[in-house]
Image 1: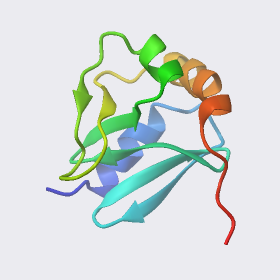
Image 2 (image 1 turned 45 degrees about the vertical axis):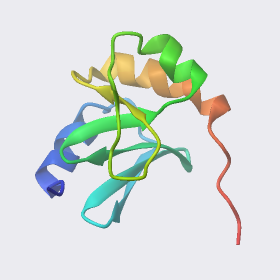
Image 3 (image 1 turned 135 degrees about the horizontal axis):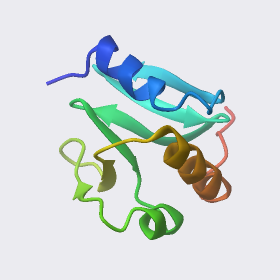
Length: 102
């Protein structure tokens, strides 16, 4: 099952104070970037973030899920809240790898 553009818009609307969030379509799903750094994606209509220590510390009640066969586990955000999302992204940003240059 792939993610629709409407689902993408819904999740992006949960981040109105986060003007630096961008998306990129990838095989029917969407990768999400904050200030140019990959932080997660929308897979099968689920908002998932990278399973890194700073995210795990903030998302203690979120389930670890596999977005697709062969992928690393990610943390699912069940009920995104604009204020919480801004806090989460600001917290995990320093731990996200910088964009690779070719």
